[in-house]
Image (cartoon, rainbow, N blue to C red; front, side, top):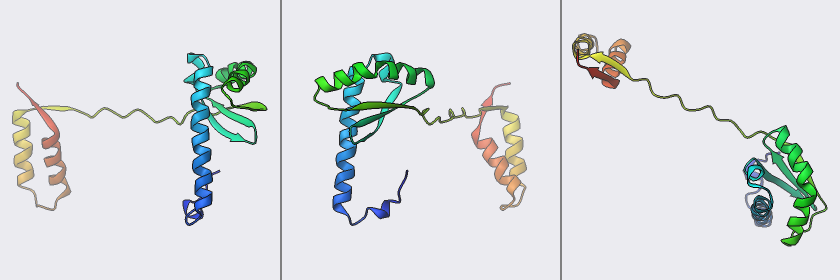
Length: 146
């Protein structure tokens, strides 16, 4: 659950606890990544530690099932590294997907067309939106030899 940041302003003890918790989660993420096989380690992340229950988010259901199967071995591996936990809870939480950036459109027009559009734009009033659009089109177009 997200909280407004101003809720914590002026409360040094609260910020210190948050910082310590974040540091603990970072260390746990390192331990978990070392204990898991590489194909699993990159597809999950430590989400929280509450009391002595570690919460791990998996990218999909198949990874979550593998993590549930590996939980007893993971508990033993973490215990060997000095991390005492009672259990591991696995939840499915796909990573936030960011749509890929659209490649820029490259317009190729002839030199004559560029000159004609530039001349047309020059005859339009300064504040005309069509003039600005034509100038932008000519500026961002690549000229080709005909």
